[in-house]
Length: 229
Image (cartoon, rainbow, N blue to C red; front, side, top):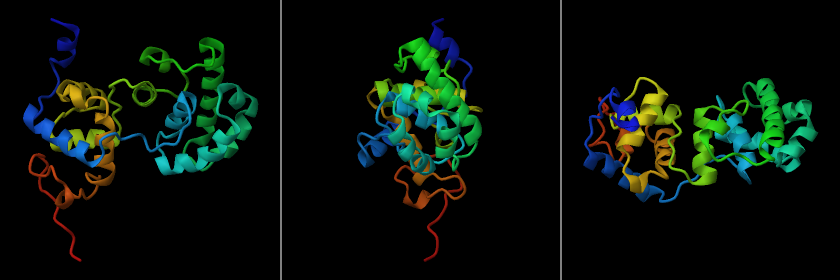
């Protein structure tokens, strides 16, 4: 049995067929043909930092904090020269800012020492960086290097399970399931589409089913109704 088949063998089965999943992606593509992350960055390094800072924080909040930070330091060398205390001051409005400041300095120093200040373009190397997990690595690989990865956050986890297009009990199962069922022509932008759908339509508490073009395909029940004006 091939390696991928072994990984996929015990995953929960999608309740949507390939044609239905294709319809979902076609709709999301029609809304935004080439989506990008909502985090602001200027190069792969600032992208790594921004995504690492976004854990348990909103993109809007991260962008507010990193605007001045990245003006002061947009390379590993500049960040290390800035120092942990100053980094902490820049990002103090972000949750877990003390630990994140430490990780930003550590990952910057590691990039200098081990990678010639260049951000590596493979997951195994990226996740060695302090504060960089699988999700962060997948975002960087997709956004900075154009690789068709699936960075599963709470939004994607919710959408994949609610629609039943790629169910899973944890983010890794959902990631594998989405990689399995996503048609190749949609693979590059798939995780951005699903994030945006979860962030603005398939929201956590009261999903906007009444304003969702894939509501007839989605397996979520009961569908929410349009609020009274």
